Image 1 (spheres, helix red, strand yellow):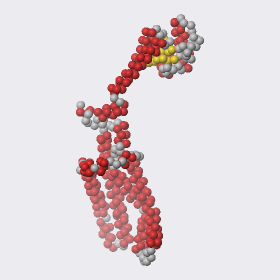
Image 2: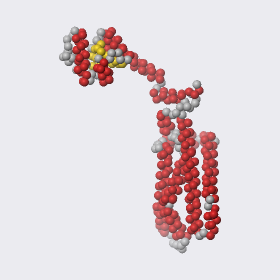
Image 3: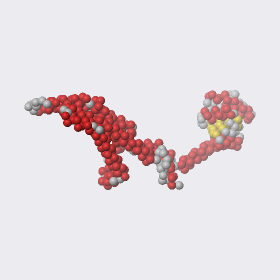
Image 4: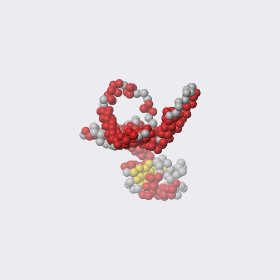
Length: 359
């Protein structure tokens, strides 16, 4: 059956997904991050760019529209450069903050918080020319190259249609003043860039959906891979079965030594069996020496019959003792009265004097 060994027809297990995450193999679109940063930057320019626009306009008027200062000593230049730098930083910081926040959020939305220090380790394969050549001319690289060309075509079409739609306004600039031309150019470039960003966002979303689908296909597992994973996580099934068989054998051997020395066996009558032992001289309360259900209960009853240990049918008591009592420990205090009644019956059945604790 080839589908059990070669075809990846099973969804990835949680362990496979966690391992892929630890190795950084997650669906992620770099185009989506770039598109979100571009849209975020343009939106920030639209909402917060007035201060930057005014600063650059005032700076141009001051530098180009006034008489230049003849003082050009180092101190004066340093003071002027510092003042311009502070004002420029004050105008640019809100825009840069929006761009940084957009970049962080879009990456967190794609892969969540992920810290992979092993990715920073030196890897010879990353600088191996042969491996780099193979990656360069591989099918994924060709697909990325084709998608890049497709994006360039889309950007060109969107930009061309945007500018073509303003042909009349562009022709009317012949009689416009310099400020009017500047405002028109700024508006045209801004809204054309925003349209391009919207087109890139749509393409990036499609690319992200494709990356998620491809990642799911890559994570799918064959039947043999699932078996190997189960062996790794749980151990070899044959070894587990052998271990359980040995444990059952040891439990049966303990029954063979503990049940014959019991004082009584409480049954339910065939499903459960609990062997109790009580010695008034050495025990403060009756102790459960063995208990079991099904095959183990049958084994306890058989050993009790062979050893002459009395078997007492008490359905409710057997159920409670099987559920609450532990082997090797005294019975729960709530069951003292019920067990004392059983012991009284056993002693009377055997014609032995009743111990004070059971009387």
